[in-house]
Every structure is written in structure tokens, then in C-alpha cells.
Length: 343
Image 1 (tube, rainbow, N blue to C red):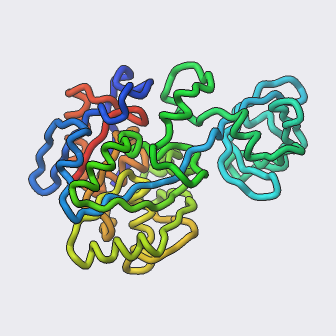
Image 2 (image 1 turned 30 degrees about the vertical axis):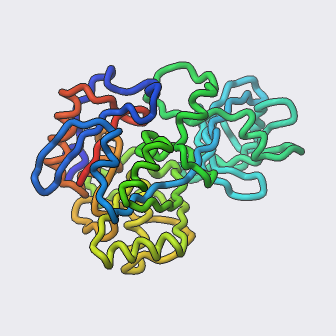
């Protein structure tokens, strides 16, 4: 399968630039894989589409304000995105413009808060070492901005609203540099209705890193690999999911990151097992899903690893038809956009 098979045309005006006033007010396209049907619904109807006994699995990773702006010792402005904590105040970061950041270059972010460029990271940005006497995590939280994706074309003002809305209501474990966006639609009320309907809600953690949204650079998808990301599944969650499988109850993943964590775990052990480590699974055509039975997901960029994952789950032709329908029906796309429930 070629990368070009996952291209679609999207008018710029359908890329959501702001969250809706009400999280749960999104539209939802229901895609039935067996019947090959598409139905326009509203997200608030989701609890009625979840059966008693189903297990809804969410990614409880919390986005932190990973984008920092600074000035080099030569006066050049620099934007960095924290990518991976290497310990001892050292971070692997994506930088713009990267070419100016030679080893030894100093970047000042605020009074008493700077960093020195240590090295380049083999085509994956640069490594910097922060210099401060204060608590580093607290400084990042105070000065950093939420890492909104580049297709959101509005001023990066450090909006308090984005700090709230580019975050799921159930976020707990700090560590993501991008939101697990399928979860952004949920409110406490929606979650309560899911429980009242007789379904379970379980959490896993997968910290969304650069690998999730890195462009696919291989024309032949057999050569594509998604970079590893840190994840965790508790023994209680593994036990619950194994029981659901044994009872032939549906496991519904909220988002592609949840899907990757669950599928990676089952692919490794043959069933769900408690694990904390890195997920290195790349889902491309030919992969046989073993963990999930349904998927709630947002609409993804053309030729992205996320669109490839969703298409592998539901069938490429069917998903591309669904995307064609969503464009024609004027759905809102990407992080702050609408969603699709694939059953």
C-alpha cells in the first residue's frame, strides 16, 4: 500500500480553529464496518450507542505546556517543543530554527531560566540542558504554552482557555505534548451517562510524543515506523479487559493513542497484562486487531500514521468514503473538530 492512497482534499475552512463552547456539542459520524453504512449523529448520543457490559477505555495522559519561546545569546528568537525528558535537566526538543542552535549556544527563556544546547539528536531535534535554581517542572508550567498543532492558525497567546480545553476532563498523568483528541469531547455528564447505561470505563496512559504526529516519510508503508512512546496499563485494568474479552463484551478505544497502547500490549503478551514501558507498535495495512472492537476517533490529517491506523481498522476504502462524506457534510476536522464512532 502506498502513502498516496491516504490522501484526501480538505478545505481550509473545515479545520477547526477553536473549541466549541460546549465540549459535548460536536457532531459524530457513526461508521458501521459490517454494514458499510454512515450515519450523522451528535456526540451526546454516544452513551445510547454503548451497550451494557461494554468497556470504554480512555487515555488519561495530561498535556503539559511544552512549547517555550526564548532568545539566543546572539539575539535570535527561538521556539522549542519539549519532546523527551532525558533526566538531569536535559531534554530532547524540536526547535525552530534548528540550524542556528549549535552546541554551546545559550537560550534565555526568562530571568533565571535558560538552557544550553548540548548536541543534535540524530535528525530528531536537539538536546538542551536547562539552567535554573528553581523547580524545572514548575517553571515550564508557568512559562510554557500549550502545544497547539501548527494547523491552528491563530496567535499563540498562551490562552487560559486552551490550557483548559486542549485537555481531557479525565487527564491525570502529566507527560503528553499533544492531546489525545478523541477524548476532548467528553464531559463529566457524558461519562456518568456511560456508567449509568451499564458500561465500564477504564484508563490507560500513553504519553503522546512526536512519534504520534510525525509525518510519514516512507512511500511504501512497509517501511514506516512510529517512534516509541511511554505507556502504562495497570493490573486492575488488564484484569477488567481480559474479563471483557472472555465474556465477548466489546472493548471501545477512545482515540488512536489508546488503541496503540492496547494493541501493543496484547500483541506482546497474547492477552492484556500490567505493563509500564514503551509502545513501539506501528499499525499499517495487514495488521490484525486483537484488542479493540470499536473506536471513537477524530478526523486526521491526510497521509498521517493516525489515518493509516484508522483505515487499517475499518478498511481503507470505507474510511476514505467516510472522510469524503464528512467533507461534503461540513464536519469540523482535526484536534478541536468533530469525531467518528467506528463500530
